[in-house]
Image 1 (tube, one colour):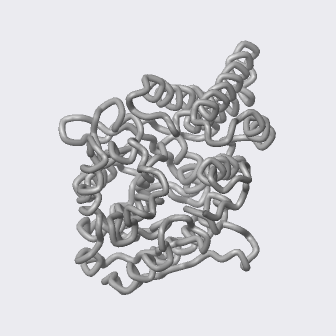
Image 2 (cartoon, helix red, strand yellow; image 1 turned 90 degrees about the vertical axis):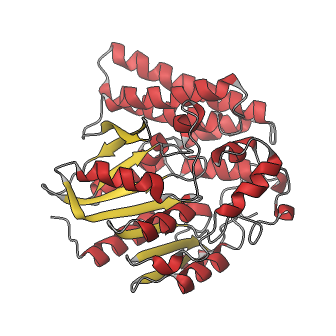
Image 3 (cartoon, one colour; image 1 turned 60 degrees about the vertical axis):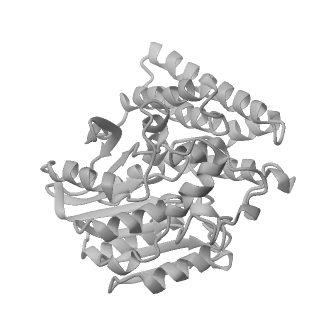
Length: 383
């Protein structure tokens, strides 16, 4: 597996190295710090999930304590950024925990609570929202554009299999607001506390939860109803084209990664060097590994992509470790029915990175392609 930053040189621990790269990618957006990450990595025993949890949780506590101390002195700057970093380090801490471990839910709540604490010191609006869905609500954050006024284009963002709405604030919502877009990030079915506290898994017919979310956005007076865009990463590279194919109010879509099928065709059982993590079972509502193998076959875009009509961009890193990412991207492109459809492959020779899974090694590359494309197809030039 190719990982840009080898925090743990032994290739057996490539996923831990990737998770470190993921944290490093948030530095520019106030979500982490290089030296703090470096110090934690030095104390982690490679391949030891308990060591992983312990060190990131420790770092989260240190940052949270720093923020609380700053509050005593009215130091808003340190309080804000301390809580922001704590939220992301807690997210990293819970990553390998299973749902049977009580620390999983407790740490997910710490992710949320420290982010909420940081919000008190933001220099821009960030609204806590609740999206109605099947007798419950899906919690998230609406971040308005910092450019322009009135009804503006809005990004509805779908998380990957293990990302959280608090992380997505740094990945997409904050950058989107600076680029002239409103952005909604939320815990859709299968995400974070929606999964582990409310018990709501994801589903293959993603329009089932995307359409009520579009309804929610359309009730806001600041959302342009003709320019709602759907963006998502990793596992959501399946959800985005699926939902856009069945939800005609989506004006444009961007998929960070390419997932034509989540099943045996591109992810044969032999591809998994270790059994899929129980989180992945729970994500799609499986209770056992065998049930997971069965349910995942429902996640395919075969026979779906021809229904797509909105402009769509598939953005793939040339060194994405997801199976046959470029091949899946080509197949998605070929079968997509939209008049405007593009596949962009980010290569190392281009010199800026952004080549790994979901471009976590340089989010600026991802933002450049995303907002250039959306501005073009929407005919949008932020004031």
